[in-house]
Image (cartoon, rainbow over the protein chains, first blue to last red):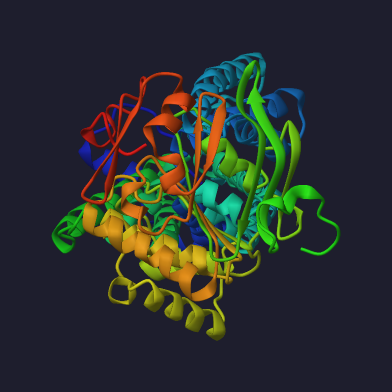
Length: 293
Length: 280
């Protein structure tokens, strides 16, 4: 599937390693499950990102993804299901952060403590792992092409479950994200809602780690929503745009990457970054923010 | 409301909506208040005053069912208070909603109508009409579709009043709702709260640093300070003698042009509103 040439190359070769559309149709058939998994992840990642932004949790996303990486690395070392390991790590991190970090300041210090520990553990497990090095780096920088079909189905199913869960808690979660005190006074079970949100976030981060890699999860869980928020403040337009941006980044990245010999992650991160840049520029022109008092 | 309510109602013969009996609360050695017996009846406007750390916020949390008492009882509408009781309309301190929050004015009000409900976020027609009526009742219809983050503090606070009025509350609980608003918006927001009281008989418990914006509306004052409290009409409580006794240090209460100015409160909120003497 890949050229695998690792020699110093000229500009023409460089281009063909980055973008190569020979036998594209054939390749497309081989990776259609990856595309599907990427599409669902892009959509759900964009949607949950709207709440990640409102709840000021970008750093938490990064912390969860490092613990998820540690779980996946442990699974690799002990020869068990890597997706399961990734899920366990992410859920433990998400729940710990959710239980101990109700306030932003507490949360950030807990994440700051957890994250290097998780990353360190992951590196230890990978160093002990005797297998192929491609698997090792895949966890940090993305490996969707090497995920097998049954696992891809699992990833898509988990993303869909997160989507449903998110829609079901949408209103109480919006209330809690805007003003937790008032929400509690008005009958929102705020602890339950925040913890459920953390579990959903843990699930989607674990899926992202498999597809885009632990270091780059933010490109699908934060960037699309951040771009959408530059363009609108409507409670309908923002989630829709975030989903579209996430979808375009994930699917576009995979489609561009499959012909070349490079990992998919740089394509996804670049597309999502470019979308953000354009959104910022358009947002500047369109919105002379009146009355920010 | 029903059942035998023992001597609790001695001050007000009618059925109290909020009723504290011999209530006490403290943290460690520090007593916030002790033997607090208080009834709030329909149509009453109770202002809760006192310096920072005097237990105003804790009293609010107790009423909201989030802070259990050390002793005594607190009942709302005849039953022990509970967490998340939607019959209490809660108006919080004015915290400015950041720009870019994906929510319009009407969405903020709608949270009061259905923000507690799980399930797909689809509003029913009846709920939309209810939100429109609430927006109109707080004079916020013309900015209902603006992003909340673009609105001024006063406009946001009107929306919060609308949110609190959703579900026809039996009582309004206000936590410094006028803080950091300009005079015009202070008047506007406090009049909205007072109008609800006059038209529906909804009692108001109003926690504040500065009694002046609501002085004309207040029936009774609960003044908390130094582990003690005084309760009565503004004329009874806001006097030099009462506050001197409460604070244990000479305090002067001056009345000028319909305003009450309190001078000499030990380490009071000197930085608030830029005066040492802001009324209470």
